[in-house]
Amino acid sequence: MKRVSLALGLGLGLAAAGTLVLPPGWQHWQLLAAAEDPVALADLRLVQVLSAQRLDAEIDSAIAARDAELTESLIALAGTQDIPVSFEQKRRLQVLKDGALGQAVTDFGHGFVAGDRESGAAFAGALVGDVSGYGDLRDLAVEGRKWLGGEGADATVLAIAAAGLAISAATWISFGGTLPARNGLSAVKAASKTKLLSPALTAHLTRVAAGAIDRPALNASLAAASRFDIAAARVAAGGIVKPAAMARFATLGQDSGAVYARTGQRGLRQVLSIADDAGDIGKAAKLSAAKGTATRAILKLLGRGALVLGALSLSAVGWMLALIGYAVAIAMLAQRFGWWLGRRLFPRRATA
Image (cartoon, rainbow, N blue to C red):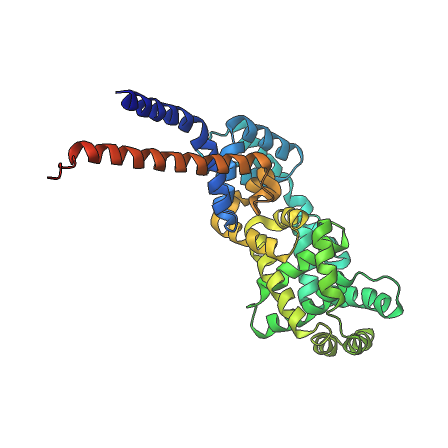
């Protein structure tokens, strides 16, 4: 009887402990399992931070900042979570979008001439300049002369301009087949020029670019650019970036272009500001493919936590160890109960 009472007490104690250990332990275990899946990781972390009050405040903040794309993204996220959005917020968003039309034409022209990409229209103008070869030749000439003269050139801008010229040639030949990669590289180059890349990503791309540039090919391309011979400059630019690095820049362009296509230039800048390396941009591309319009809202709410798990805190490790310990205790109790039940159901016969 005492053993039965003891077993019952242990069972009740484990059940009570389970209500404390299981939820946080399982939650942290799921986060660890989703470490390489940005879509699952974002879904798990949204549960922790998302609320109607938080989303309402973020929408008001985005409207106040005149960021129509982010506002639309937040409203799209609200729709996926069945969180209502007020009519007044939707009305203010429409007013914001209507007022942006007049500025678009001016921004497009400024983007083409100066390479500015602050707005979506300016980015479109800069992109036309890059695809035509004008924007990349301009940046190649400016940074290339600094590089050859030892004047502290921006190696990332130089390498991306050279890679961009080569990809632009492929874009024309393939009738736009490589345009997403061209778009992505153009956006990364712009962010590098305006110092909007995260420090870690800046260091990563600088290391890649510094070992990627071929000086003789750079000299040849600059000579062609000085004669405004775009065709010859493109041919020479194809050899400025060494093949292995060229493949990495092409992948960077593809992933960045995929993010840009689904989130706009501001969404891509969000990613570039939190990414540590090109792999993080690839994760953002996967996230944007799954979440579409809501991607910017997720990045705004979770930051870098939408892409990577990060280091586990001591508290998280403790909860997972507690979960393991709880599972072992349950297994031991089940084993003991099985033995007791077996002896009751199948008692040993006395031997003669």
